[in-house]
Length: 465
Image (cartoon, rainbow, N blue to C red):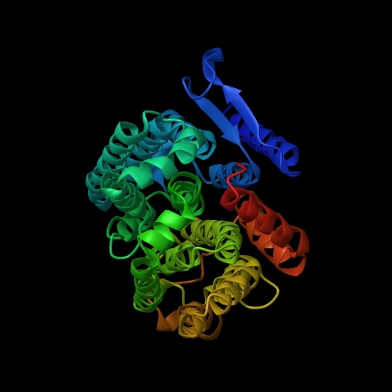
């Protein structure tokens, strides 16, 4: 039933994407209460794409939901599936709602169910990870709620499109309260996005969660919050206020660069695969926020491209790790010596995902980083463009480290024994192969995707969504 529900979400999201591909915006008034009085669901190119990415990754991750090494998940299958579907509901709701308060409601729905999913990990450390995420997530949600309250006080509405229309007059009357509201929005969302230095919850959460949950969260949770950050900056407050009046780019650019290097360097020194990928995600979030820091259409285009590329690649890599954990019983890097000879398909998929993280030509990661570098050069940020290239080279180190251990080391050099290990089942390999295969496909055939991202960026910057 859960699988059918998720597949139906994929079908609906794909239809929404086709309906909005020409620039149309779909509006649905809940309970026939017309906006801005009633709650509105509003779908355009960008959030239809986000909804499709979330649904596809949920479908792929559910294959690992109740199997593999996560015994606690198997023991509580019904609870796990209920929490999984509730989390998916919250993420899709955040992507599609046109009401600012509903963003907070759906954020809490997805967060509360995420805490439950993380706590179902196979070790007692998962409880600590879930509790830390709960505390920091609650702080982030509270900041967001305060920002919504301040914005309602200034504009008298909760409809996000209505807020955008009233914002110029409100800013002209006196921007102090608006600035405070934006500060609360910005801190709340960046904490949930795990922007450096507000990233402390992410490594333990991804590392200690069940394997399928790690893949699901890595590919969806931060991406939906990133979409909301785009919507808040460009769709509600406006690029002129954020980047010209308040010049928030002076804060975002150095923090983004710090995240790019910190996340990648920390990944090099990790002792487990899931923790390595978790710290890598912090670096990838740095690329996402850097794209927004430019405050330009080219930057938003690069951000949208990297959102999709990273979602597919990182979710696929976590599913590959889930395949390894299913057979090996651990994700410790010291136990992977010579494992590529016993699990050749899994390690081949890891290499595909790894080159996607690096940004090798032929992958979606290369396309998104190419446009990110182009956006930096167009904005006159030549040094930033060099930083993007240098931080990408660090990814070569931690990806090659796994490749070297798996392919060129013998089992005798590691802590584990490879004799009883065999390749993962097709049921587990196919979802990972599908996501990573999509990353390669969009890397080789990127014209349509780039055009779509450019149109989505133009739509949201033009206030047409």
